[in-house]
Length: 274
Image (cartoon, rainbow, N blue to C red):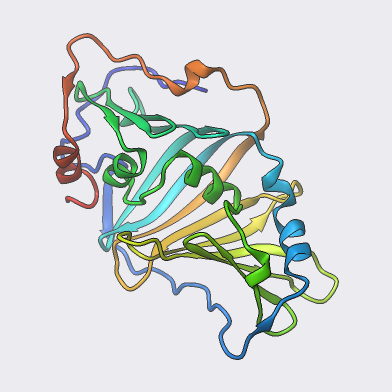
């Protein structure tokens, strides 16, 4: 993955770890999802297979992510460099306009490291979803991050799917419900939205738009439901799939003298703490 040159101020000096704060944000309304009478959906397995054919073929994924939106009602912008690999590896770098990255996050399985190069601080052996929530507001581990960015599923159960009208199918997927939509009869099914209701985690939604010719979304929106905890729009560009990513991409060299930072300290300095 591309690395950014070194040198620059501390990420704690008047800015969020993810990006500089801009203005109070007034988010656009979430997509209106269908409601009303539902019936069993005997064609759900075929619809799901069509909607997820592209994402299920992804073993590695790299992209540049333009982030905009808000956390806690305050606007933000950032640029992330992402690398993901199955089964459960992830790397995120929050690039700065110049100098060192604001942070480098790597995860393999249930183990994550976060390096703050500008501050000389490091958190080792954290839970990936807890560390990512502390710096980016959204609680995702490496597997969930790949699923979310590619618009995919993890444990769908089409036998319990529901049909709402001719052009919507709702499929249970673990703690989530996946909304499949087609523009008209005969048009391709797309993963349009997911609603995540995992216990002890803020209910949040994902929305997908602007599908590429390869069938993957180029615009993703992640928003908490019933609160202003986060509302983030992700513009995905420079996407490459199934390139070889070396194991070294999912490690980080910790500089000598780096000072440990605890998860509570990280939370207090990150977007949710601020």
